[in-house]
Amino acid sequence: MVRAASGALSLCGGGTRGVAFGAGEVLETSSLSGIRLYEPGALTLVAGAGTPVAEVEAVLAAQRQRLAFEVPDMRGVLGRGGVSTLGGVVAVNACGPRRVQVGSARDHLIGVRFVDGRGTVVKSGGRVMKNVTGLDLVKLMAGSHGTLGVISEVAFKLQSMPETEMTLRTQVPLAEGLGLLRQALGSPFEVSGAAFGRFGALLRIEGMEASVRYRAQALQDFLGGDWAEVAGRTLWAIVRDGGGLGEGALWRVSCKPTAAEAVVEALHGVEHEATFDWGGGLIWIAVRGVADGGASVIRGALAGVGHATLLRGSGAAVFHPEPPGVAALSRALRAKFDPRAVLNAGIFDQGARG
Ligand SMILES: Cc1cc2nc3c(=O)[nH]c(=O)nc-3n(C[C@H](O)[C@H](O)[C@H](O)COP(=O)(O)OP(=O)(O)OC[C@H]3O[C@@H](n4cnc5c(N)ncnc54)[C@H](O)[C@@H]3O)c2cc1C
Image 1: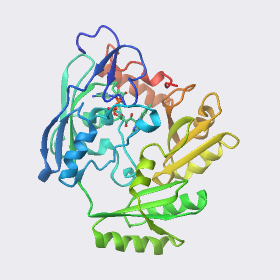
Image 2 (image 1 turned 135 degrees about the vertical axis):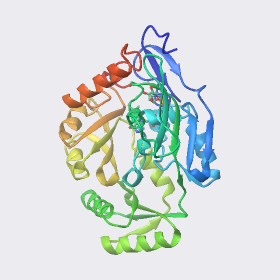
Image 3 (image 1 turned 90 degrees about the vertical axis):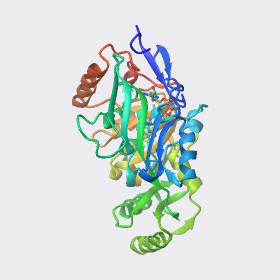
Image 4 (image 1 turned 180 degrees about the vertical axis):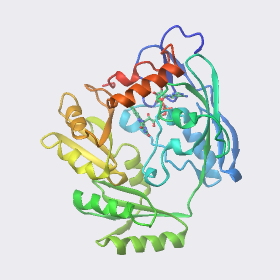
């Protein structure tokens, strides 16, 4: 289909984000589905890019294993049906609250097979971590939003599920809460989640039972204040899946954790809500009643410290403008991988759906 394309192709995995933004014939990956290899002992999984994430997670859970980067389920906030696919997750370089500890999809992807814009099948990486000859196209494909190739197969390294996890919560004002989260992330107690929202300040610790108990106590002694153990599963899912915010333009802001308060303060006078993850390194912001969804204020406040993606809403560009040097590199890569500009052409220049 790529080889024969005479115009733009719009790549669609599970479609939970909507079928790209541009026009063009839709190329669906659903038939590239199925687990091709799963070796629990080697903590490795290879599957077609159209394989539903839920199917993979169920198979892994039966062996007490998981994709460590916590795949978000954005269907609720985006008002979409469908099921996320492994290819879609790699294309956006998905991740959840555990990113502070283990990284994103990119950090767990060890092999990829894709079709470039000429229709050539390319394979990079493999089933073992040490497969490092040649250019590392594996890392490049993660987060390329379907502009460099149609991903057809992915290989992931897996993680064993921890014996237990514990969530600690304290109810403090924003500045104090973010300060505590950043202190916790800088501590040696291996925090795997650090979020702040309407629910208060949350910290997560995972591992062996005795280790979790020891680290939770040591962390509380180190931070001081009034922490309580709470049931965390639902809270972390809220943080992971868009922050549990109400209606309005929904932004996913990545910034220096120390800049988080200033970014939100810049919205003073504009109706908004925010949930903070990664100690302030990720902010979900819902903005209401402003024509551009708060784009000019948010992106202005982020100058030099971060970038913002519009996940829901209209009136602004979806992706943050890239600095000129990075934009030139991105264009050059796209020209190399997709010289006819058929794959998700122009998605970085367009606005979101309403
Ligand atoms: C603007 C926007 C940005 C987002 N960014 C993030 C993010 O940074 N992190 C995050 O966790 N979640 C992000 N999401 C949520 C994201 O939709 C899901 O995490 C995940 O991509 C859904 O998988 P899917 O199979 O439904 O993908 P789809 O909704 O079908 O597609 C998502 C994107 O991936 C491309 N794509 C899908 N399959 C392939 C393939 N096989 N080969 C190449 N490209 C493919 C599509 O063209 C589209 O651009 C974002 C959503 C939106 C609306």
